[in-house]
Image (cartoon, rainbow over all chains, first blue to last red; front, side, top):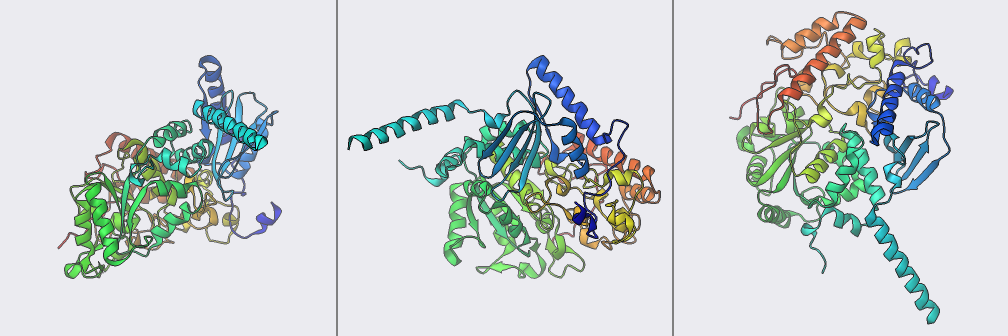
Length: 148
Length: 386
């Protein structure tokens, strides 16, 4: 960070708006309240929710504050599907921080998901059926090779 | 039996290219984010797209610099976006297609005939009307003839870039070729403007995706731009906005304020009057956008941006509208707002922004309409076709 700060052009690393007494900037506190609301709705009605972080005008400093505020949980999943994705559980059960990158490792989506398990980790029935037939094909191929 | 290309759904094409559901879900999540749609919409979009048929696209290039096409192809190259572009059936583009001469024109005629009433026309560049349209000709035909012929059977016309949307730089004074935007020539087809010099590649992709998924045109603003991408001003979504609200402005490009990343309003930033998705979608794969690199917005996605005075004059001093002409009410309010330094300026501009958005929400007009919504940006009177 120090090297970037020495460059004579403004960057997002500039001073963030003043933090409140609990150490959260106004934007970060608003996101925290929205997460709390989504989590309460999940508990009460089973409805999943998400917040698109890229659409929010947050500084990098604000984002780091939010990450620190939410903390780290026990689960971290890495997905390799046309580029890397990382789905990380926060210290708040049911609150996940997902980062999705394209084949060039460029960030294409960053989302806080409030759900039991993020959608991208869950398989559809079609995918399970494809997996079942694929496994049968592999077994048949293996058997044919063994018998020949 | 193998499917013919034009009979394929997008799902068929994805399966053919071994694109997993997760990879496609990621792409749709990113597209939903780019369109400022709720993240949960990405899943529904993925399901809709998989069963959608590939729309035929005819891409026409007229009086332009090819920057728009460069922008588009930069987004699509080998990533999954490339596959999406592949699954949109691009039947004619004189820059990218292998065919040339009579064979290329035959491909355009075939696409029109086989998809009459259903194909999309993308137009890149303004259309020169001066001296019978002789300033842009291909195959012995003028741009305006080709446009009129191709537009007849189009489901919609997508104008890519500020030149086809509003005339752009060819249309700027003194406009030696008599350039006009497409909307001043074609009056009976739905038109979507994706302005920008160049437009953001993901905005082009997102608009095409939305059309492919829903089969309908997106909601448009008074300038016929998709509200999903053009509903907010750059200023509304700018990460430097808190400094504007606090009255902290850079006074030069190398002062303390500039080094601290303060607001660039006084250095001529046109963010408050420019509607586009640069601050959220960003450029170069989401790396940054001009303001993040220390330069103010130049307002390139707005009509007549090249004729509005210095790019480095603050909005309060810029001539929004031409000298001697009446200035729109919004401009007057901005001028007044610009004279007040500090939080009051921020609050006033925020109110203006909200005011405009509310009017857009309540006052969207159909794609074929031409009237301005009340409170829309400064009016630009297009030169009439001779």
